[in-house]
Image 1 (tube, helix red, strand yellow):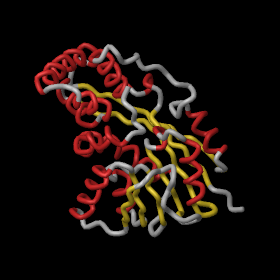
Image 2 (spheres, one colour; image 1 turned 180 degrees about the horizontal axis):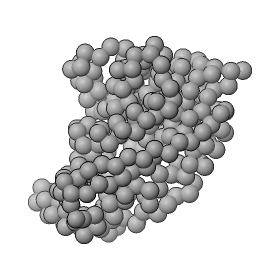
Image 3 (cartoon, one colour; image 1 turned 30 degrees about the vertical axis):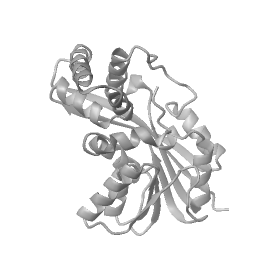
Image 4 (cartoon, rainbow, N blue to C red; image 1 turned 135 degrees about the vertical axis):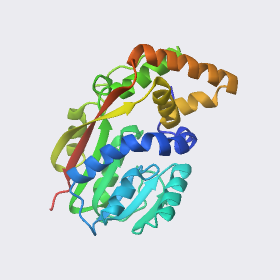
Length: 271
């Protein structure tokens, strides 16, 4: 099983993640930004920012963003994108979301979209968000829902299990942030008030099994880790096997596959 709390798989997948996964993540980042009601001029932390999917949207909205991630490769892509688009108002930081290099009471809002869910110590992640938020500031944490609500990721999980028999079939972890009740309870335990969890659903179109597989393979950290262990010939054969399996599970093509996310919103008390 790939350890997604480790930087290596994220560095490996950074380039493919930017091109293949970003369009999917952008839909949910936009939803989170609007649910949190970020305003122009606000100071915002984007924790576990990846290649800056949310950061770019926040900057376009006129927010001042501190973007932080532990993957140097992800941050280089973000830096390149900001320079290409001549984006102002963003500072980039390499670091750990469980030990933020920011002052207390610094931000009007703090986000961790599909990042804190992988932290080895989630309470530390919440605590750091809480510490760095100003009184009355907004915290936003998102997680993918269980696979039965995410057909797109269910296809990926089933395909990986088929290709690597040593992997255990995925099961619902009721104690993870896949469970919206856990997300709400953990935010409250960290001290946030007025906590609500919103359900966001989106569908994505795929013209062929090849289109779906190459998008998953290029944008998935676990698949990138699998590829790193294979020879080119073995990887080519694995791709052929994957495409046949995807046709059997998700065909006929073209088709649409959906994903569901939980978006948790809370507020640091005024007093």
